[in-house]
Amino acid sequence: MPNVKIVMGGQMITRCHDTLFDSKELKSYWDYLVLWEGELPLLDIHEAVIHGKKVEFVNVLENSNPLKRVERNQKTVPMEDLPSPDFSDMEFDKYLFSDILIPLQTSRSCYARCKFCAIPFGANLRFRQKTYKQVLGDMMKIKELLRKRYNRDAVYFKFMDDTTSPRLLYDLAKEIESLNLDVRWDTFARLDKDYADDDFMAQLYRGGCRKLCWGLESSDPDILIRMNKKNTKTQNTRILNASAKAGILNFCFILLGFPGETQEQRDSMADYIINNPDIHVLTIATFDF
Image 1: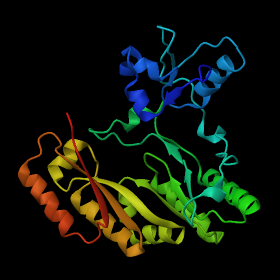
Image 2: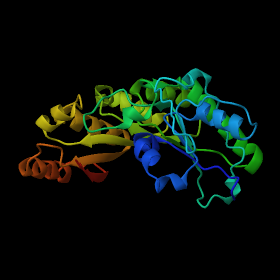
Image 3: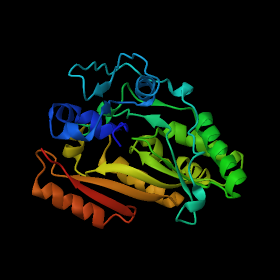
Image 4: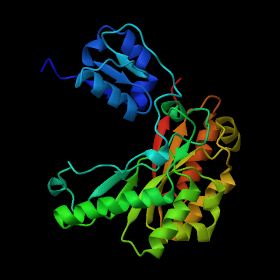
């Protein structure tokens, strides 16, 4: 299919675009690389390829052009202008599971700056988020689509964020409860002090929260400081307990091998995990450098 154009983008492509652009071997696998957010760059590619218009690409690397214009703060769409996601071409009647899980995005980037993390580099600008009313509107439109087309309800939602702010989650949960909507959701969150409140977590549960994916990383105070996590072992333990008491599943990310970490600190982390019943599921990653 010589006329088909291969476009690659996303977090990993953005981080590794220099390698992809400079490698003769890897260049055979793509026609365009889109850096950072893709709505406007993809529109530019569409105009150039489909309509034959002359377009000055920004944050789009063209395989056949040795020149590139990369400007991180350009080609973004304000969160309030983003349309609701369009699932009209999804064949949900062919879904393999009995319950349909819908991906949604409430925010972009992350408001933290952990020393080990490249996530903030994957967005054009600082942390931005939709309003809870926008998120709720997205949910309602998807529910309506599934009811009309398949006579099914969309109940389960996965917020595909790098992180979601506690305030947005709280406001959304209150509105879901007040409207008595049949909704369940999970997301990625930081261990911020807002979550240490039992009433706060109970509200999240009543508003549909069933799982939170936490960046726990370590239980060692020194490592947490060096990681710039902005939290403490005591605070993290309190949050996990409040979440578990509310009925929310705690999924924790653990990071081993951070520079300077000792075997004693790793052993202490293992003891913390084993003896903490509020850590329900975990995944362990190693720091490579």
